[in-house]
Image 1: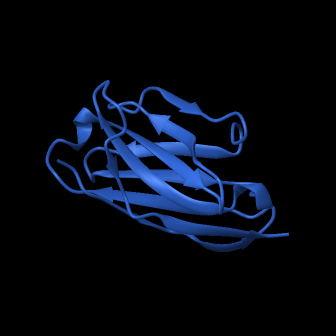
Image 2 (image 1 turned 120 degrees about the vertical axis):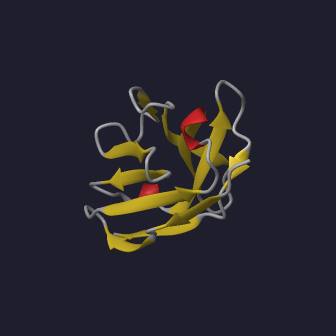
Length: 118
């Protein structure tokens, strides 16, 4: 089991940057793929980025490629999402997620709000 707590959301102007962080409990953090998802008001939760257990491989939604960077620190049990060149379309609640090895996303944080003003 792993519990996830996000932080770092807030209000930023378009073109600005934010860094989200997700702290995970448990001693098997390195066994989990980690990801970030976001949900805008009235919309479904969408995939943003993911990173493999060792951090060697990452993948991103097309809409954030080149602007967002996901990283993890297995020694600290954290996964971060650096978001640059933010757009109003990036607004929403951002959720940290974990999936054990190749299983589906099964653990979720409570979410952190990101607001981008135009």
